[in-house]
Amino acid sequence: MQAHVPFDKRLKKIVRRHEKMANGVVRTVNSDGLIVAKPRLYRPRFPLKGLLAVLFLGFLFKGFLFAYLGEAAYGERVAALQGGSVLEQAGAWVMQPDPVTMLAATGIATVLPQN
Image (cartoon, rainbow, N blue to C red; front, side, top):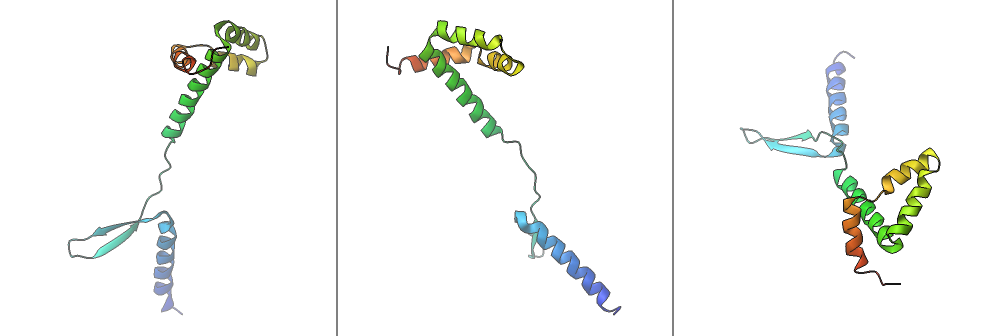
């Protein structure tokens, strides 16, 4: 039974390495020409592109509302939100007109049909 201990140890090491390779492998060639596959390390990344897309769409939505409702009606609705609960007050803070919203609204107003 002692003769199988090194074999079992090597087998466990191979199985562990194989499980790590579920994320893919990186193959390198040694100086002697041997191709060695090593597991690719998994590093979760922050979804920056997704965050930027959400911000862009949020400003576009605010600009659409501002252009569709008009400055007076938009201001009234934001003021109504400011008198509400904490969540509504947070929404009012987010929905306040800013320079990016105004820029988007002017671009969208050219496309929207006039009432």
